[in-house]
Image (cartoon, rainbow, N blue to C red; front, side):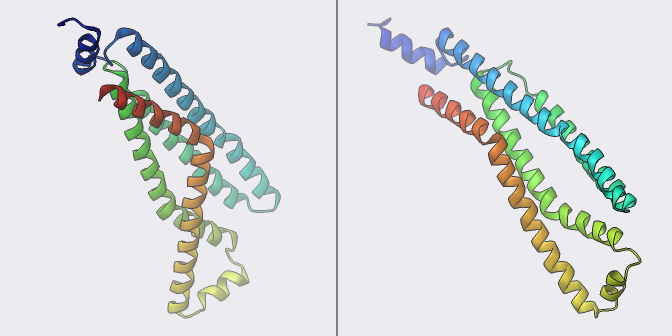
Length: 201
């Protein structure tokens, strides 16, 4: 039979202007949009939480006589806030004008790109930022003067060891926080994409 249920079902999914049957497509479109909106809302809240922490950092460091260190930490945190805001804007530009399937694939790819970017940023940037912070903290102190009087090979070795430790610590902390905050969203995203792949095949 040309118009059997099986034929209509198969042709509908192979055409795939969306996911085939309009009701199924509408369901996945709603679920996709709801999931992504929740993820973006969580990202916004997570990013905005940096601002009070930045303010607390300068207050806390100033209270113990380290105003410039507090100012430095606050500047780093506000810089991270602005960077996160810019990255969020790139996520906002992803459109659901095509299909829910393509929309979710684009969003997952963008999220993975952000994960790689921040892993690299923390892996390389955190040690540099932390070492500068240590210098500010110990500026004109006997500890810093004694460190600078060491042989160059020892200074390089200590800085390299500290950098590797901070890099590993930063990346590990980032991956753990990512899993705790966004792990559930990413799992649901992968499950929806897997379901759509199964329907398409």
